[in-house]
Structure formats: C-alpha cells, structure tokens
Image (cartoon, rainbow, N blue to C red; front, top):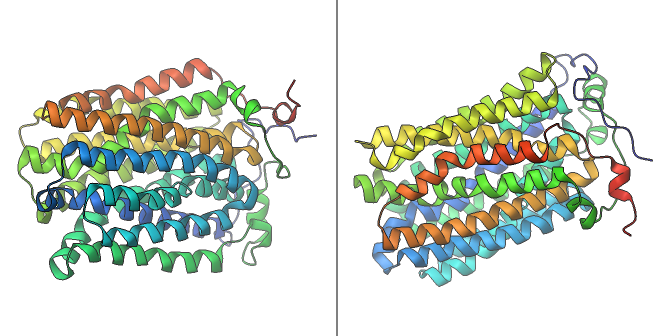
Length: 438
C-alpha cells in the first residue's frame, strides 16, 4: 500500500536548529552543476557571430545545430528521467556530467555546423540528466514547503552560468584561441564531479545530518522505490499539465540562451568583447526572478495558503513579467532592450521554479523522475520547433519581432493550460499508478 499524500496545508514539525544545514550544501552543489551545464551549452552561442563569419555558417545551418541539440536533449531527458528513478540522483548525475564533459571538449575539434551538430549530441545527452537528477535530489533532501525555494535557488545557477560565459569566453578566446574556450570550460565539470561523488549521500546515510534536520526532511511520508508504467502516467491529468507547460515555456528560454548574442550583434552592432554587460544584466534579473518565484510560493505556504493557491499565484505573477518583452525588438537602445528581455527571463525562471516543483508536489517520489523526463522531452520538442522557426524567420524576415511576440504570451498560455488540467492541485494516488493495465 502506498502512503497517503501529505495535505498541502500541513504545518509539519518545527524547523531544524542552526545545526541542520546539510541540505543547503547539497542545494549549493546542485546550483554549481546547473551553472556549469549552462556555461558549457552557451559557449557556442557567444562564439556564434564570430564563427559564423569565419566559417560561413548560414542562419538555417545554426538553427539545425540548435534543433539537433534539442532533439538529443529531449530524447535523453526521458531516458534520464527513468534512469534516475532507478539508480538515484548520485549515480545519475555522475553519469550525466561525465557524458556532457566529453561532448563539450569535443567541440574544440570541429568547425562546420555539421561538426558542431555531431559533438553537441553527447553534450545534450549528458545535460539532459541535469534537472531529473537535481529534482530527484531535491525530493530526497527537501520537504514540500522548502522544495520550490530549493528548486528556485539551484535553477538560478542557469543564470549564473549564462552570466559567467560571456565574461570568460572572450578572455579565453583572445588569449588562447576559441578552441580553448570549450576545453577549459569542459574541464571545470571534472572538479564538480569529484566534489559530488565525495559529498553526496541520501539524508539517512549522510554523516553530517543532525537528527533535527533529518526529522524535518522526513516530515513527509517516503515510499519505497518502485517501477511505474508509462500508460498510467499518461492517464493522469497532472502529467499532461506538466508536459504542456514545459512545451510552451521551454522554447522561450532556449531561444534567449542560444540567440541573444546574435540579436545584440544584429540589432545593436555589439561584438563578442561587448556581449558581457547586457547579458550580465539579463541573467542577474533572471536570477532574482528565479529565487523570487520560489520564495513567493514558499512564503504563501508558510502563511497557510493551499498548495494550489501558492503555486498558481506565483505562476501568474511571473507570467505577467514576460508580457512587455513583445516590444524589445523596437527598443530605442541596447539597455532598454536588455531590461525588457531581463524582465522576461526573470518571469521565466520564477515560473519554472514553480512549474518544475509540480511533479514532486503531485506525484509519489518514485514517479517524479519519469514525469520530469516527459516534461523535459516536451520542452525540447517545443524548442526544436522554435529553433526551426527562428532560423526561418531570421533567414527570410531578418528580425526577431515574431519571436518576442510569442515569448510575451507563452507563460500566460502555459498557466491557462495548467489551470484547465489541474484546477486543484490534487496529489496522484500512488496505488493508481501501480494498478495493472487492463
């Protein structure tokens, strides 16, 4: 028999004392991994304007690089989601990091869009394990009340990675050449891997966890790991809410990540040495949005709001932040454009922190990785379609206006779909997921 779901407004035990902070160290490791994954995937986008001139890439050729990255990412997301459910966060993350490090360093040995497409496939396959493993670790280490905040914190690592990349890549390129940008950033993940393998344990196995912190972490019932059928997952409205939400919002983030340096170069004449300041502004704003989104729902829960109200209030607030980006293409100067895009990125990250918490909120822990995998695949599929669309728009039209128009409404659409499919956040009964197919 599965344990009954914890009521969303359960107050739980008192918070642990100052001695109980191992879970936040784990969150710090997750933050660093997410940051490194975004450094590795963004190096190419920073180099794109200069490599495009040097090697004669077309817009549609670069669009194909993005397309196949996301195809491999989406397929591997499903695989890693299932794999993490079976082998756990520690082994799953170690495998993912090892795979993407090989792919990142291999970028140094190709020059064509076809070559970059080939080496980005193992990068995508490994990076697909980032969020399934991170969310599984968050499910192990954080009770529901802190989970969105923890997700918001490590999700903010994406923005730190996006900030660091345009600052360090020009320095590496001007000093050692563009190939070393891939080699040195790839080697950073080896350091993280050693720290992860040396420190990470499940809460009950960790020698530094105090009894108070363990009681707080285990304030929700924990069910034994077990297999889950795809057919049973697809029969749940909650699964489709997460899939549809990711399909609508992920393409916006991928587009910002892979095309912003190109947008600034084309619209405002910014070169590689000058990408840093506007991108730093954008991703600092995104960092604030990520933590704000997680904090908002966690704060509402602490004040006694239902899980449904807390999450959806945060989702609506963050969705509204993205609306003004529709006029970014016509902004009179670089900094106004960067501010509008930064506001949208803040909205995205805050929205994501709460949407990413949905599987852990509504599904048994042993099923969350599979649901996360399906959502990641859906988001990657949306990103693939957007990559093709963006390549076509830029080749044929030459402007980013239609792309920003979609970004401005994507989050409100996603919230509408989530509301229709899950008007109330009702946890899925684990027994139903285990029922035999007829």
